[in-house]
Image (cartoon, rainbow, N blue to C red):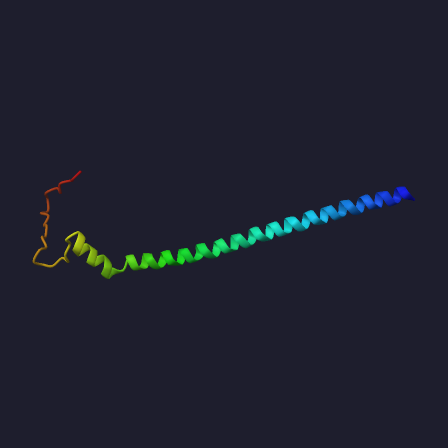
Length: 96
């Protein structure tokens, strides 16, 4: 009878240790999941902020202002436009 009790006690201890280990692992995995979800939310917010900045930087008015101020570009008008006419029969020169 004592052998059976010892075997049952040993089985109970092994089961208890296994249960503690499983609960510890489940808490660890839950914490990792929580961290990953927090990071995902932060990255999503950063992505939205970057998209808003991209839209701001690519606004046509801003691009036109930068082109005029930094590159000294101006809109094309007929007064400064040069038209090139190709005569039929003469080959067009290829530029490298």
